[in-house]
Structure formats: structure tokens, C-alpha cells
Length: 117
Image (cartoon, rainbow, N blue to C red; front, side):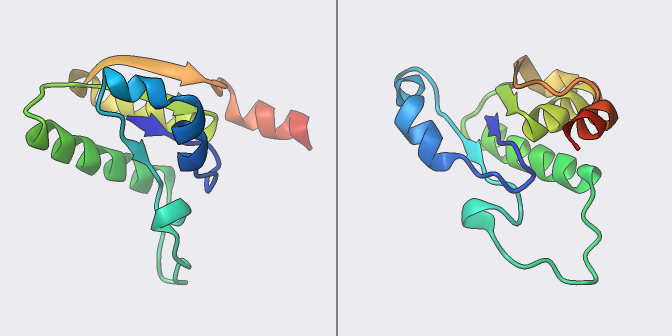
């Protein structure tokens, strides 16, 4: 499962173009986070979206995938902001992931933001 960067930086077209070979070996799932890509909508003022909201979304989707494909675990790849979610997820639910891959891995979010300004 691919966790895109951003938040809001949906990458489905890029995955299709540059990573289609993976689909010959794996069922590749590109999760477009709520509010991004095909999941785009305008957040309401009442919604309280946090990183934990996204983690629970990932959990729900992975649970669905494991049941659908009759698997015990998934491979998880996180890019940029998705790498932050990936690390949080595997810390909370290590039993659901065979292996985690970080691309553009964020290690220190506060320092990253400070340096980029």
C-alpha cells in the first residue's frame, strides 16, 4: 500500500506511470488521503482532522484489504508526509505490516519545516 506525500499531494498518475511493473507481482493499492485526489472534498469547519485521523483511515483500509485478499499483513510504502504516517502506523500496528519502505523519509518534522522556511 502506498501512502502519498503532502498532505494533499495525491500521486496516482505518477504511480501508474513509473511503478506499473509492481502490479505484475503485487496488488498495488494507492491510498488517496481524505481531501486529496479522488477523495477530495472541502473539509467542514466542524471536522477535526489530525494525523491520528489519517492513521485510523490507514488502519481501516488495511483491515479491509487483509480481509478482501485473505492476507495477514501488507507491504507499506510511505513517501514524504506519507512516510510520517507510515512510521506512526507501524509503531502502533506492527503486526499488520510485513515490511515498511520510506521514500523521502521524514525523520524530524519540526526541523524540516524550520529549515524549509
